[in-house]
Length: 330
Image (cartoon, helix red, strand yellow):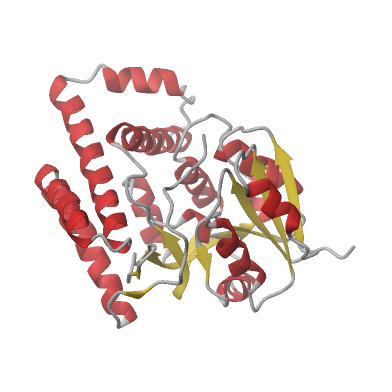
């Protein structure tokens, strides 16, 4: 069996009804020299049956008990044979040229260890201009250090050996495993994003509440703390100790953390409602986010509008997909 150039890595947990569309977007790539590693992370819906029905020889299914996203991705990473590993999520869409453009970029830029791509957000009813991601290593590192999104995790392609060398994903059952990985990759190689839009990221309504968003924010802060300690050659700190320090902060700081979490979750829920065709409900949620955090919400809206203008189009009808509530990793 020949070794593929690319290993596409996906973890799926109760991923119907969106999984078939995501899988087909990979199998329909113009670049064909890849294997498709799909880790079924203990699904209890129709996901296992669908995966077993796939007849494409490039697909390899790894089934396991539920462990959570980061551990499932590490299991998949162990099975990757390609020179490059490309991430993919079970509810998103890779446009046909995605893998080919990223392979060419990494082939031509040996100093770059990880490359993402420009991304459009979409829902059941609309595709938006989406997010304009920074393209240079310097700008990506600055965004990571500030806790901002610098790459869309399921859109990246990286050198497999490099991902393994930096330790893969953290094994803790924490969210924000992507931010931590990006921080470590950026310390070992250059990072980049390519265009034009090659990836569509599905936005769901109501998928995150304030408590979940607070956990994400804390995970990002923790990954930044670990990076700062590596740079200054200080010992690492455990997550429990890190959160104890946050919980011991003055009441004003703790209140600010909760307000930020609820504002971000309300904004994302609003965007999900808008792309799902529920415009007025979406506007109400975004208005709530603006009331809680005006500067943050304005910054995000400007970013989305800029993405629309760069694409030279307004929102259009999305590919048809069955309507269902989001399900994610436990």
